[in-house]
Image 1 (cartoon, rainbow, N blue to C red):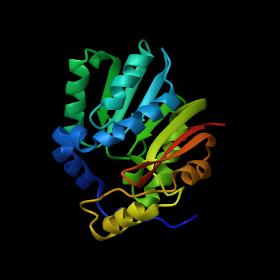
Image 2: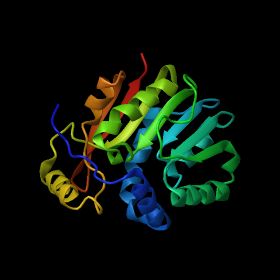
Image 3: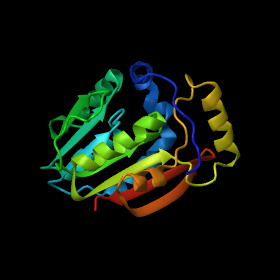
Length: 219
């Protein structure tokens, strides 16, 4: 597999950073929403299902998932207290706060039993983890999913050629990791290597940066 950059900052520091960004994040990352919606289309949550979102941020995807599962349960996990507050406010204003459970945690393993979720969703989050943690995160996703459960990941991707903007961004990440704390990762290869079966894989660009959307299942 092609080498990819490390993330050289502590998890706790990332939580503080995203708490500061939380009130403005929807505006700063508005271009991500299109890809989040595409990922949710692949996840296709159904009424009665239990869905876990890793890195729920401001609650944009949580709102869609909760409205889809209805009598089921949408659970979100995020490391940032600021994001938790913004997501809580969003879901309360939408009148669906009681359909979700939002948890703040920055540790592994994730605090859930084996084989309890129908789906796991993560958008623009996996690429924030340092390289040695990526297999641990994916193994945890597989552990909490039911047999046949599905995983959908939206991520900056190194599965396809980076292109000029991707190479510039990766260089910027390597030189100024405090400002650009995520980087493209070989997301499809990582998912396959950690025991999932790829169902669908799509490649896009966002402001010239490569974005992958992967749907996979537990054998």
